[in-house]
Image 1 (cartoon, rainbow, N blue to C red):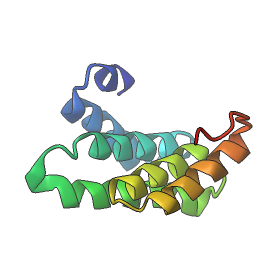
Image 2: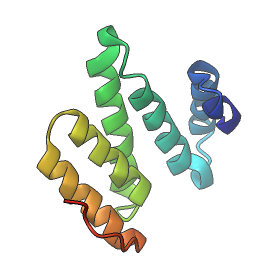
Image 3: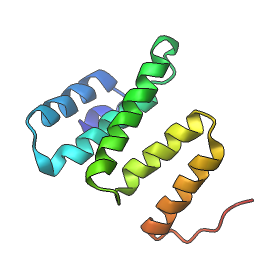
Image 4: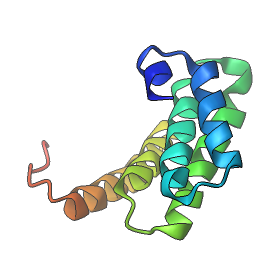
Length: 110
């Protein structure tokens, strides 16, 4: 899946992560959902699927956070969704929390 992601081969990557999710392997579930969310987000440039892809990415990130509220990668995904929707202040709050829990000490660039 990662090889396909690195080559921007979204369809084959999605197939790999879908197969992993169908097998219900708990050790890779969050990573697979995160990767699927990232695939949907990366494909927002297709106008006819914009709303569907935005919602699907958001749903995947949220499902990860329901099981693991401390998953910084999924929270970062929620931040990108909020920013994409123009909810900049909410996005900034999410990104600040992600930075806090990840130990990043770079100050805000105003």
